Image (cartoon, rainbow, N blue to C red):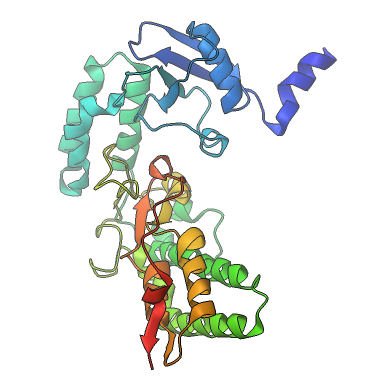
Length: 341
């Protein structure tokens, strides 16, 4: 009994129940797993896949690849995973109802859309597909247009009483992310030993902080009441995943409306503002190198650094499943950070 309990809680993760299946859906099993490695091992055993064979594991609902424990741990118990072998693909079960779901963004026809989706549910026997469509029906049942705290108290549960509108909360969420980029940049330059270099870099950070204050730390990025050019969402609060940094768009059609409910607001926390040209691997190292090699008659260009760190020209909103963490090809040179005096 002791060994069973030890195995259950070893690694600090609780055992949860999941489903695994192959691409043909002919083989489908229930298993319990504590992490991604455990799921992979047990899934291969159930599906009779050799232990040393490479597989790609994706979520059945939308085809998102599960390649880390960070993402795996965000998924609910009873989630279903598809084990793909070489040459196999999975586009997600939601594809069957895409055209109906796409109409959800026309919120003036809620009743007609709900009826249409329920008709699809009547013909659908897969519980996973029903669950996916039901999530969209849940949003139809909410008052997406409600903005004031008194109109939707549940949405504000757990939040500071100072917030009176959803827009204030979402604006603060965007500001927190932008502030974190400035903080991490400062932390990175603190490691420099040369006093002159560190002083020049600190001056750049202060210039950017002044500009950030002037721009409200770009809180408008998540504020649906902001102008269309400033925000990432539409005027109802719908956000579209813009796809991985090396893709033209999100092929998996990830969308979310954090204004709809508390649950979707919390889930939006898993969406990333991804730097196309990486902040910590390229932008800041290039800036540091520029400070070290700055030629006479020039100064560091804070506007250029600001553009890379905080503006939409280098930021892309992505659902966590589309966030690629691999190193990227270098695209900027230290010389781009100089401006003549």
